[in-house]
Image 1 (cartoon, helix red, strand yellow):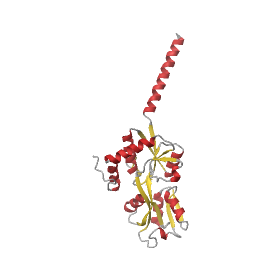
Image 2: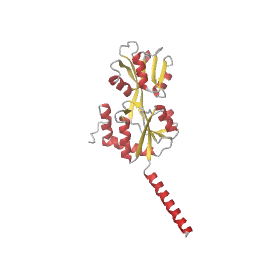
Image 3: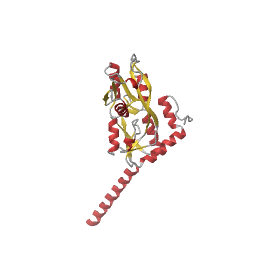
Image 4: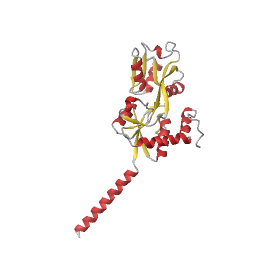
Length: 258
């Protein structure tokens, strides 16, 4: 009787563990790493405590379309890149430029945003009209970004000052501690128009055309599903709805999905 009782208990335990294991597999929540402050792509709404922005709306729409659950975690940009390389996170979306160097260690989705680099200076600055005027100047940017690489590769005669967050770079520019800021076009334009209190302006042309991609650990099986969901959102107009919400225009000219 004791042996039979023990056998029944063991069988129940095995079935319970199998059921729990199956549930975890079917309802897995994928971790999404994102930047903690890259307006208007991702930033914290302090009133709601939620991450908002173009990237946040897009990844949530992609997750809905692909039928997957996600959990978003914000961090400094460098942490997103290393989080993909170490496979700590399943997905990374942070206005990340697709580069050949990054493709050696992480995978990317199809491009989802066309970008580039731009300069900002103080409103009354007449010396810096383009990147040709950066020799001997202090130019601030965010560490670990393509703008830092661009400055060091193309303007060794400039003093490159890096910060963990781009807002710190803008603040140093407004206070006169640096002469210019170089960073991604949409962020520069947004800050100058909305947060600089009229103290800054953009100068020169858009530099180094770039494309943003959603990042994954090397060999991730999610890439195909995300690409398929992204293309569906582009085709059915939902991508344009999100794009218009944050940038005031429709990129592909599709009809509203509503």
